[in-house]
Length: 141
Image (cartoon, rainbow, N blue to C red; front, top):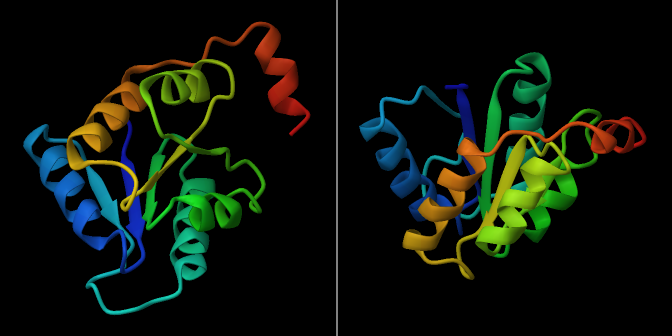
């Protein structure tokens, strides 16, 4: 299993802690790069921080959480070799890995239930990149 780097802003903090608890129970190694409370912070700071860690450790996968997931995905995708995917259902999650080789899942804590967040995370972690015709497309990103 790959190492998981996780980050959130204040809006995603509770869901981040819930996900960390789930991953700890599965004995998956986690690197939490913040935020560390529900106190208001700026989401780009944490998306940048996570993206830099993923870029240095290419075998890692990332989990970013904010209120909608939109701010985190916009920020993370500014980084070379980061392919963040906003996952809002099982199919979008699976395809983000199969076809786009996403290495960061982005979740909206105000839009996704805890149960579904875990469901999507499991799909994200278990799904492998299909390669083939998709590989040349990834190189164009």
